Structure formats: C-alpha cells, structure tokens
Length: 305
Image 1: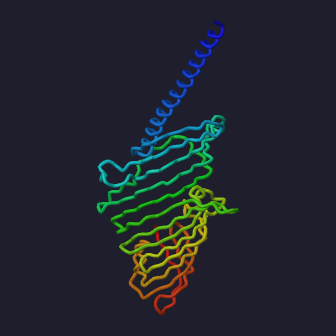
Image 2 (image 1 turned 180 degrees about the vertical axis):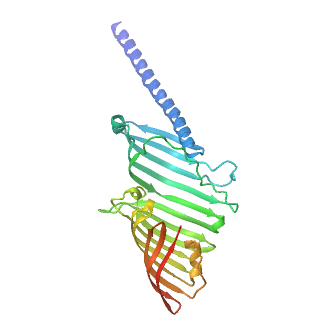
C-alpha cells in the first residue's frame, strides 16, 4: 500500500514537472514570437520599409546574443514584383552588453556578425530607385559598436541611368597580427563598358575612428581605362586628412568622365599620377606628373563635388 502511494506521488510530481517545464517552453516560444513581431515593427518604422524576420532567438547572459535568420528588407511600394528585395540576410548575430545598458543606459554592441547578406540596388531609367530609405531618427544616443564582420556578402547594382550592371562581393578578412580589412571585388558593366575592380580597406566601423587613418587600396579597369588609388584618409566621412596617390591611364581623357564626373576633352593616350585630397570644399588632384600623347603634363586639377 505504501509502495503504491509513493509511486502515485512520484508520478504526480513527474507530471507536474513536465507541465511546468512544458508551460515554460511554450511561454518562452510565445515570448520569442511576440518579440520578433516587435523587432519587425520597430525596424520597419526606422527604415520606412517592411522588414520581416524568419526566426529570432535570444541567448540571455551578461552579454546577450540575438540571432535573426532570414531577414528581408522589402522594396518600395509599387516596385516590380519580380525583382529581388532590397536586402536579404541569411543570418544576423548581434551581441548586446546588458550590464553596460543597465548601469549607464548606453547601448553597447561589442559584436555584429552579418552572414550572407545580399543587396539589390536598382535605379530605373526614370530615376526611380529602390535604395532611398526614409530613415526615422531614434531620438537617443547612437549605440556603441565594437566589431562588424561581413561573411559572404554580395551587392548587385543595376543602375540604368549610368548604364551599369555589376556585382560586388564583400567580406571581412582577418589576417594574423593585422587589423581586420574589408575586401571587395566587382565585375560587370559600367557606362556601357566592362568593369573589373578590387578594393581592400579598413573596416566599415573604422571609418569613424579619426585616431587611426582609414587605409584604402583600390584598382579599377573600366573598358581600356585603368585607375589605382592608394593611401589613407584620417576622417573619411568628412573627406579630411587624405594622404592618397592616384594613378590613371587610358586611351583618352574623355574616357574618365564616367568614373570622375568631370567633362574632359578627347586626347591621345595618357598616363598620369599625383596626390589626391579634399581642401576648401574642393577635391584636388595635385602634383600631377605624366604624359598625354607625346606631351608632358603637370599641375593641379581642383573641382567642387
């Protein structure tokens, strides 16, 4: 009799435990679904576009990890339905320091990992574009972000007014004992001519770090015109503190117009090099040395952007 009663109590306790655990799991899942809806609504309001998330998971801790799968940013209303969305991200992992926020109300994000982001940037012949976002202000202090990594990124640009259709692969590379670098490679057409480009620069977040000049090494071949830009910029977002060298070569100066936006005359083949900076609200190409046809060329070219 006593054995049967103990068994009954044991089964009852086990049933209650299963009920509590099961209820907790259901509540957690419902909470995550609700939170996903809240995040989607907030992101949509901020970007002025519909944002959807396939799955959202949160791993709590002093530094919480938020993982969003299959994030999609839609095109504008009345955009052709057959086009890809403006952006889709296979996985977005964000780590948030909750302790810092509780102490100082400062949003501290030590790490963001963006996996397989795909961007489709398009502009139609009538200049309607899908990449103009009606960004809403947050009204608070900007978050402090530590490290941003991009894995397997791709940008497809189809820009009819520029007669351009090219694809850019983007990734973050971390070499031993060296700062992380943003690496990009492009192929396609620009100004109706084949284009091929490669670039290695500092990470996106280091653009705001004035204490460490932002490095850049860019090579572009557009048709028969070639360009290379090397050096550093102390404040890239303000176009200040540039220490850059620019090399240009091609069949005629007129071919530089699609790349520079500057109207230049038809000339014999040219080869030029010089320093590039931004002074008094003007872009300066100075200390120029080179040849145009059989003539030597030197001096300075300054234009207002």
